[in-house]
Length: 65
Image (cartoon, rainbow, N blue to C red; front, side, top):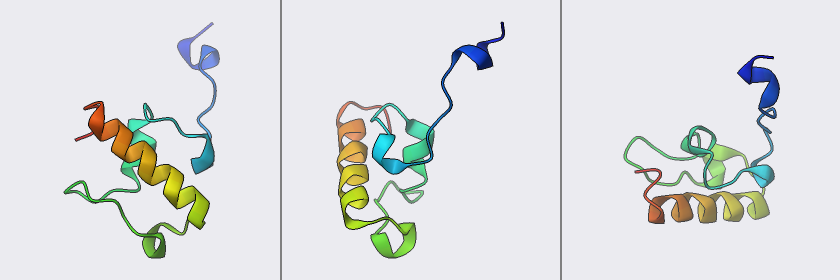
């Protein structure tokens, strides 16, 4: 069995992200690290709050700079 078969598929739903999903969360930040507003991300208010908290937690844990 290859490694790809052992790993679960990444969810495209922002509600299922964790602060360890660096690539997924990078879609919601600019090159300078600022969090993009809902106007550009197209997320619901609840999803935007969750993504923002995950990005801030990831920054605090120094996983995403």
